[in-house]
Length: 250
Ligand code: PEP
Image: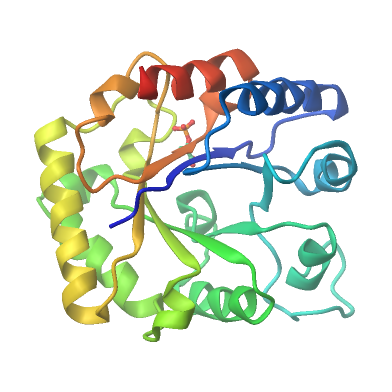
């Protein structure tokens, strides 16, 4: 059973230095509400991670990255690339792996598996994204697709699995404003959770991602096995992000 709730912001290719103010406001809010069973992480573009590290109380806000290079764990002659060791240096605690926007650019399950191995070696916590596209969803293949994505990349031992959180992100929901129905999601999360317990003998935290906003967050409160959210567009402005947290709990 996971009591801790995760609210993970994925800023994607958004955010200038001035936008770090939004994180300050979220941090102030979190200090006020004093929640312990709670993880708030901002997965920022590389350009903002160093500044964020020096500016925020990293006890309230965790820093996360959105990607890293699979070419070398530490360093090397790879122009334009960032290694996992560099993320560690920036006090990143989390990293997103397997986001559909990167899969669409050619990231294979083999690459994802290697990235998971590297992140675990450097003690970074992983948010592993999985999800089906619209065609697969319409053909009732969602569970089969996600199960396969998990089977091909997840490590087997508990010590490693403890550092992984899975974000189910139906591709057809990302940035579209369309979210799955409650009945479907409840059933889907139950199935994934059962599969993980059966085949991996471990209960991994499950998040939902895709068009989460303060307008629809209430709909997710009753999804039993959902331990939190990966939030894109609605995480860019502090007001929207704080409203999501407020409405989830009230
Ligand atoms: C995402 O891409 O991880 C995501 C959840 O995006 P959005 O909330 O904008 O749909």
